[in-house]
Amino acid sequence: MTKQAEEVIEVSVAWVDAEGGQLIWQGPVPAGATVAMALAESALGNRIAGLGRLDVGIHGRLVSRDQLLEAGDRVELYRPLLVDPKHARRQRAAARGRRAGAK
Image 1: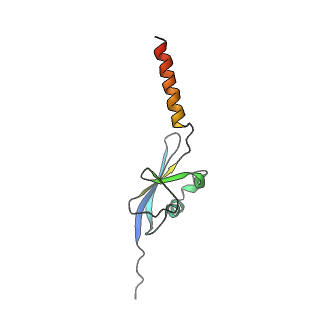
Image 2: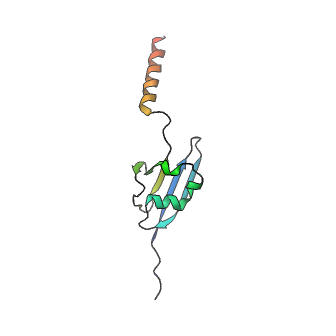
Image 3: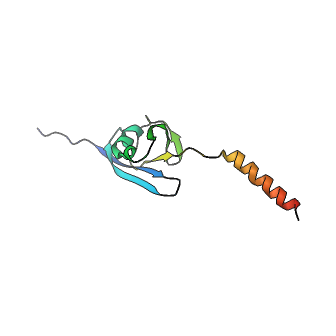
């Protein structure tokens, strides 16, 4: 009797740093693996400080680390925002208003 091979799926884990540099790991994980398992398998934690505190997503949608993966999933690590997008938009609108009034 032969041992049946464990089913695996291919996934990727992606990180983009503040300067635009990318780290992308692509490889096999066991079928039924979670986001946390893929992160551990990728070993990106050795290269990214604070990995455990970062938000994660799959194809642009926030998920928990216990989310089950499907073949072809792209796990993404999200850096914290430095500026609230709503605040930045208000600042740009106010600056445009000041420029328009200076004419």
